[in-house]
Image 1 (spheres, helix red, strand yellow):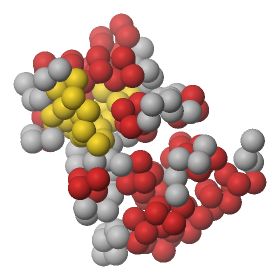
Image 2 (tube, helix red, strand yellow; image 1 turned 135 degrees about the horizontal axis):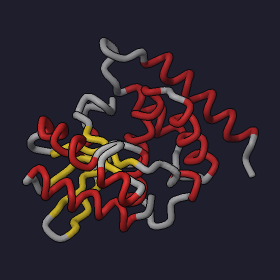
Image 3 (spheres, helix red, strand yellow; image 1 turned 90 degrees about the vertical axis):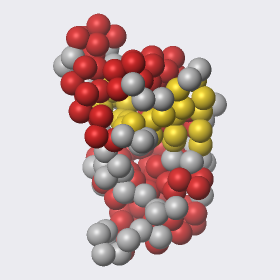
Image 4 (tube, helix red, strand yellow; image 1 turned 30 degrees about the horizontal axis):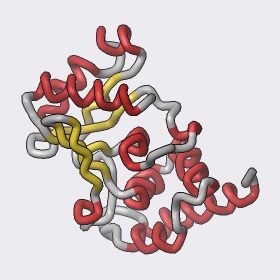
Amino acid sequence: MQRSEVEHVLRAAAAISQEKSFVLVGSQAVLLLLEKPPAALLLSAELDLYPALHPEKSDLIDGAIGALSTFHDTFGYHADGVGPETAVMPPDWMRRAHLTYLGEVTAICPELHDLAVSKCVAGRDKDADFVRVLIQAGLLDFNTLKERIGMLDKESCSVQQTLDWAERRRNEAMEFKP
């Protein structure tokens, strides 16, 4: 995905939902966070987002411009309408969020470490790739990442398991560092 495609999805999501601000919680948020993100982070063809004030409208977005939609068939990329529960992040992530203004649309992106926390919690293969690339590129401070993971709600998330997962990704990243 490219930044222009992110902007296109956001404009389409705004038109469909009649909303003007969206939270981007997936990997493609890096296109609004980093001036030149590593190419390995731009492989996804989906933009995970939800309307900031009315997350329940995500279903409208998903149905109109989501996977397998005409929009997706036409452009080769799509929205993935998600909800606030999709990305587990520190409770104060919004204080550090990055706002990007695209005309009348506002994109709210978690700070890179908070975004990485959500990937560590999800723990899928694609999340491991994402975290490893960020570490290899020197874009994450591992102590900050550990601190943010430590801020997670211990009742709903296994903090130690998440820390261990992140540590394994760091070791892998250092082992295969170009």
